[in-house]
Amino acid sequence: MYIQFNVYNQLGPGLLESIYHRILIYELEENGLNVKSEVILPVYYDNKKFDLNFKIDILVEDKVVLELKSIKELEAIHYKQLYTYLKLSDKKLGLLINFNTTNILNNIKRVVNNL
Image 1 (cartoon, rainbow, N blue to C red):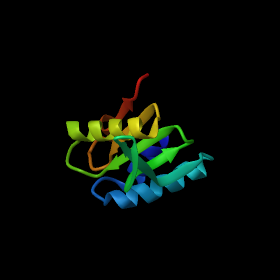
Image 2: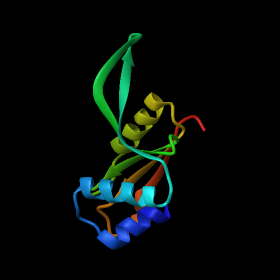
Image 3: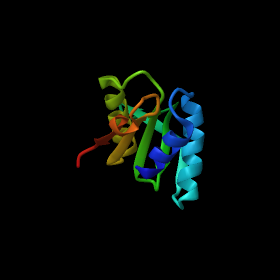
Image 4: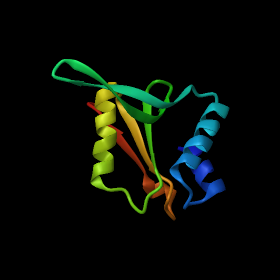
């Protein structure tokens, strides 16, 4: 979580999600991590594959899904959204991060899939 704190401490709250997205990718890569941005996930329904441009914000080390927000406050639907991404990508761990806050520590939430 140190990297998210660093990004937040340097930029502060109130910026667009896309700015935090790009800077966080930079920081993760600078720390030697393998990072993929806007990873497309196919959706399967009735045993058929649908390519719907459904995207994960950031995938770290092909293991951890990061879902970024810059909103007033996190709501239950945001947790469910990340959980759905985890199920569709068959990943176990995700972090929901809201940068639009006065306390970043209270706005980094862990979401797990079958752990």
